Amino acid sequence: MNEHCSFCKDYKCIKQADYELLRYELEEANELCHGNWIEIQHLREYIGQLQELLTRHGIAVPPEY
Image (cartoon, rainbow, N blue to C red; front, side, top):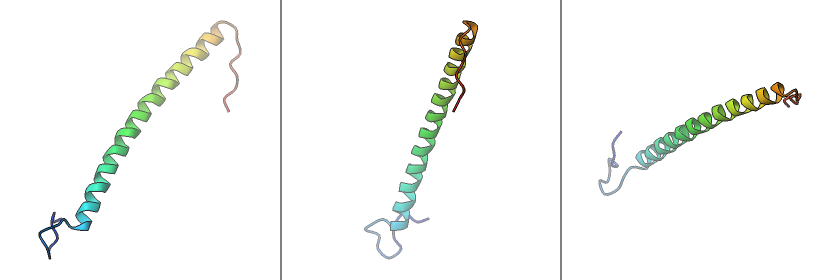
């Protein structure tokens, strides 16, 4: 893909600008998804520890919705 328009070298091709913007947005979304997944794993471990603690002390764990 050419960085500049074939007809005028003074400005970038709109398709190239769209491609760069989309690539940037996909990279950002990937980073956010990865961060969210790490947080979800941490919270699931935390919930498991809390449920185990409740069960160990004879407290019924409420059902999940």
